[in-house]
Structure formats: C-alpha cells, structure tokens
Length: 363
Image (cartoon, helix red, strand yellow):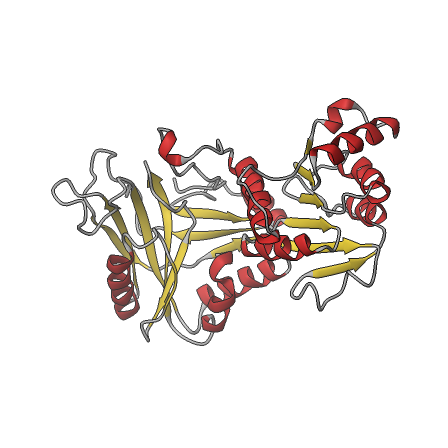
C-alpha cells in the first residue's frame, strides 16, 4: 500500500474506486502477496499487481465491482495452450481479491486511518474480507478465471496493540479475511555530506527508505544540497548514540559511513557496530579500510564486531561516479536484505522472486 499511498489518499473519502490486492502467489509470481492496485470510475489506475501480466483483466473486474458493489476473487496463471493469454507468462500464479471502496462508509474510513498510520510511520495490519471460504484452487489448476463473487464487507485495520488484543480475545480473528502487514518505513542513515552522499540519499529514498544525512560541518550539511532529506548538523557518533537510545535504530536500519576520515569514522563505527542495524558500511579504499580496522582495534572494538562492517562499501560493479557508487551500495543493501546471491541471474538456476513475508494470511 505504501507505494500508492500518496495518490490513494486523494481518492479516499472523495470518490468510489475498486481496490485489488494479491492474496496468494505460487511459483514465479513477480509481486508478493499484499501488493495493491486501485481503479476509479474515471478509468485511472494506481499501482501494479504483476508487472503487466494480469492488469488488463483485473481492470475489467474492477469496473464490474464498482458497478454492482460485489467483491470478486480471481485466480490467474499461465495458460496451458497460450502462455501469452490472460495470465502470467513467467509461469507464476496468483489470486486477487477486488472490492469496492465508496466515497462514504467504513471502508473509506478504515483506509484513511491506514494511510494516517503510514504517515506516522507506525506498524499496521490491514484486513481485507474474502468473498467466501474454500476459495483456493488446487495447485494443479493453472488456468486463469473468476473464482468467487460475494457481498462486499468491511475492512479492518489494527495497530500492534489493537492486533494483540483482538488475537487474545477473539478466536475468529483470522476467519475468511486476508491480513497484510505494513511495517514503518525503514531508515537509511548517511554520515558524511559529500557528493557521494547526494547520490546515495536519492537512491535510498527511491528504494523506499526514510533518509537522514548527518555531518558535523554546517557548510556541507545543508537542505539545499540534500532536498527532500532529513539533514542533521551534529557530530555523527553523538547523533547516532542518541537515536539508538531513543529506540529509533532497528534491524532494518541501514548505516552508511562515507566520511573516510578517522576522526569521524572511528567514534562513529564504535557506536554503529554495536547497534541493532543489520547493515553498517563504510566508504574508502582498501588502504583506508586497513587503517580504519587497526584504529578500531586500538579503540577497543572486538574483532567479531569489526567483521560486521561492509567495507569497502558496495558490490563490485566497477562503479566510478557518485551515481554508480550509489547503485553499488544499494545493490549490496538489497542483496543482504533479500538474501540474494549477487550473481548474474543468467548464471544461476531457481526462482527469481523470493518469498516476501506477509505475517497474516487468509485461512
């Protein structure tokens, strides 16, 4: 939902539209369960469910949903006779639920609250009712087609505290409803307001991170150089220590140290390598990294923590420019996050798309 949140907000409460969501996938489906697409009565479309494979068919079902208000459940997969008919030519399969959201009523209110929680960077769980029970087709049924039609029912949304209470108090919490989890936007902390930081901040924001650039030098750390980015003028190790103390550094947080200056790097990395952040990387040549490691050892940082450090930062793409270096760094971050191999896809076998966690699925 986050990828269409800004545009969706302009629709919620002001017009009728159909909301489509992937609720189950098999094999090489390109988008995970929880992916959303919306269609309004003017024919405008937000989002994508499969990268182009089934959007046309879902669009037509969305128009039917807006006409009669009934929720549709559809199954799409590669056809046995024609791989380029309605379906997924990549060989995957997916189930989609399409339901109506009116300009008034509970669903619009619930979606509006969900968007508010996203704006506040709070975790939420959104529940989308399914048309009927027992809707899943057998795994051997790969043909696309309408699976179920049912009366539209109300969405639900829960904060973590509300979700815990519902699970504790209700044995029917997961009945005939698909639940999708939206986590707070992960943070990307860039230390060192250099030219490489400008490109990295843009790339990280493009990949969905909330980006902060921190540098002790006010002449470099300016809003003009880093538009649409949180800019902090402070000694990096002090800022990071305070963020950790306030509980704002999590496992999903990325820390990129770009200063390659020991007076900044060593005190900062002493804090960063003890933080919950899964990825800590540092820019610099191999010679700089050798000096950095010795300095960290002299500062009392244990070897097992130093081995956490991704340095020199990034994957070997042959990057030269700041823009190419930003792509190299983001490639390593994504590889670690998604547990990829880093090898060319043409050189390996197996699934291209790995499962993405959705904590609450339909039952």
